[in-house]
Structures are given as C-alpha cells and as structure tokens.
Image 1 (cartoon, rainbow, N blue to C red):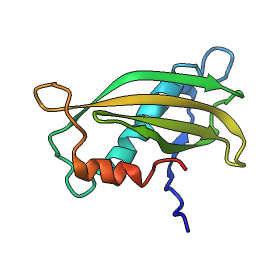
Image 2: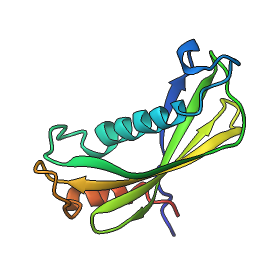
Image 3: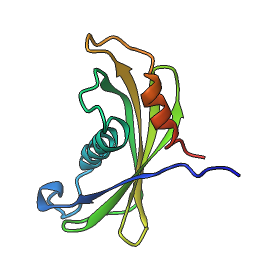
Image 4: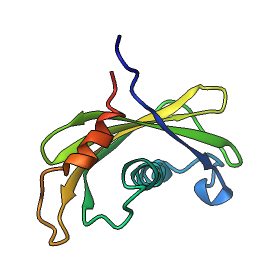
Length: 137
C-alpha cells in the first residue's frame, strides 16, 4: 500500500488591481500568487509549530506556464506539491485552477535554504520530513 502525498491548497481572490487595461490578469501577478501560496504553505504546513525558525528561503528559479485567461473577481485555487528535494533546496509546482477545476496555469519555484547569515545550508531534518509529505508521487 502506498500513501498518497499531500497537496497544499489556498484560495486567491482576483481584484481589479490584478488586471491590465484589457481586463485580464497581468502576467506578473501569477508570480506574486506563487509567493503567497509558498509562504502560506511554509507557515501553515512546515513551520506551524515554530514560526520563527532561523531558516531563510531564497527563490533561485521561478517560471510560469499560462493556459487560460483569468479576469477580475474570479477565485483561483492554488495547489502546491513538492516535486523534488535535494540537500539544500526543494522544487515546488504550483497549479492554478478555476473553481470548476479547469487548469489556468502552473509554475515552478526552486527554493534554496539559508541560515540567518545568508549561507546555503542543508535542509533541517524536521523541515525535510515535512516537505516529504507533499512530495508528488
């Protein structure tokens, strides 16, 4: 029997400030939403019992693939899964979906772990174990 990996989910509300002159969501907002989802995931699923853990996160790489248009006043569901974990970094995939489950787009972020002196460190064991629960099958 294999256990199913967890998926972190959060809602993103789309406002007029998120749109361009044509009324659709400006492309850079998806990167903001990736950050919002990543930070909610970090605070509520990884360091929930120790929010002041002395670890810094650095985004080494981010990308976004756009599949369909989004306009103001829609709600978007963001789903985060961990794709890979290495010694000092992890890669997350974040899918953006309409409420009916239609894929709007998806992106990836490579996060590197740093100590308070901004030196790359090995992912602490507690954090690594919690990340593994979200590791995609």
